[in-house]
Each structure stands twice: as structure tokens, then as C-alpha cells.
Amino acid sequence: MKSFSLSIWCPFGTIPSAAEAAMVSESCRFSLATLEVVCRAGSSSFAVTECEHADVWRWAIINTAGRVVDDGHEPTQTAAKTHAECALNFVAA
Image (cartoon, rainbow, N blue to C red; front, side, top):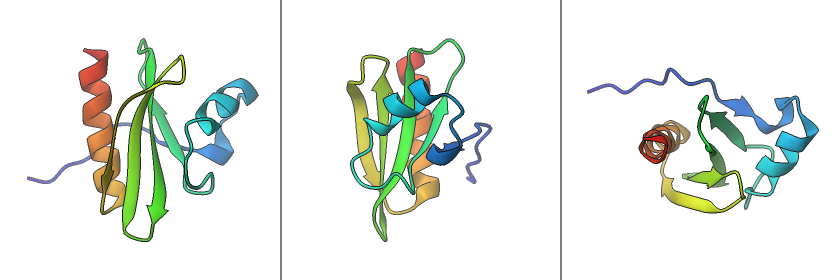
């Protein structure tokens, strides 16, 4: 089964709001250069992915208080985004 994303992931450097960029950057543990974020309308959480090592991608669900609600690691960015989106949907439900 092939997975695909309907979400639009935003690289950290393109976040238009300074306040939003500051909140997202606080969730970064490894690399702002690889950090990407996605939000859901009406959700009180957002998802991030970032590269920890060449073959290790971290994903995390962060609430608006800055607390990590869920996180994990995957071997590819695509897999990390897929897991992050599933977890974000679960948290939002």
C-alpha cells in the first residue's frame, strides 16, 4: 500500500510569523536546517520532523504549551512525516 500526504509541510525558514517560528524552533533538538512543520486547522497541536543523523529522522507532536505529546524516529523523512501525520490526526480526534 503506497502512502501519500495531503498535508503541506513548511520548512522552518519559510514560517511567516516570528511568533510561530519561535514556538516551532523550541521543539527542535537537532537541526533547524532540516526542521519542517505541519498544522491542522482547529488543532491545538502541530507536527515537526527533523534529521537527527543521515538515516534517522525524528518526528514529534507538540501542543501549544510546547509539550511533546508524542514522538518517534524513522529511517526516512517520508516515513517520519507519515507517522507524524497519523499521530497528529490521532491527537486531534
